[in-house]
Image (tube, rainbow, N blue to C red; front, top):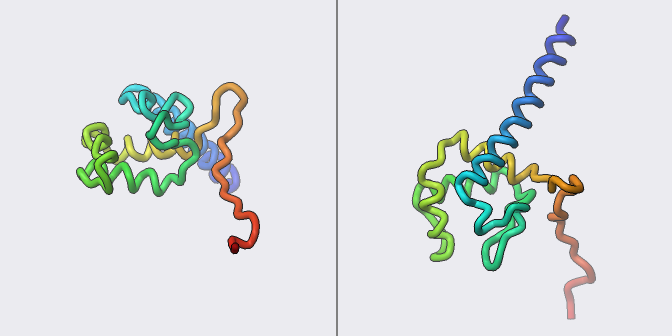
Length: 121
């Protein structure tokens, strides 16, 4: 009986996670995030990419913007977009950004960093 209960709970959690992804996607488009960061979260012009960024980092940044805190003048433009976000909105957006998969070919962006050579002269 416990195994069935655990199976049902894990199924419900997976469905809740995917719906949070969809809610984050809807919020991303509704709030106009795509106008600066792109439909594929690739970042346009001087605006940073958001695809597959660490979820905790994105939550941290959005909560700082919501608190009207930025590290430089360029980031200040994010404050009006973040002020009205709830904790659930931030959670949904960060899930969407972290788990983003391009709709066409279902590939994630490569966010890895590789060091080559010894870094010397």
